[in-house]
Picture (spheres, rainbow, N blue to C red):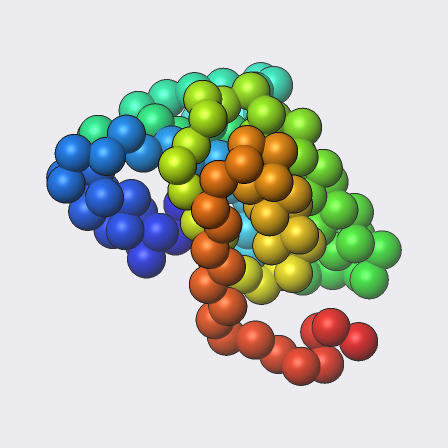
Length: 129
């Protein structure tokens, strides 16, 4: 979980909210799973007051175009599949890019009939092309 998302999740939990984070197993920028984070399917751990749910996706460094597509699309699929296993939220918040994350998170918000917020930062217009 990025530092920005970690701080936001903890601040929301600190205000009494039940916060769940859905993410993959860390592997960027090397494309190799971090020590202690080898994928074991869908797992749930606690990071302080926050529930962290991890799912496997295709690990990829900043490599070939095909590797990046597999990385982004497998992560999008994981959000759509594993997100439905979580309790119904009041709000789904997603930080993008990549844009696939926004599409999957908003589909999940429609599934749960809840609000969805997309925070777009550090966008590179050529990445959409």
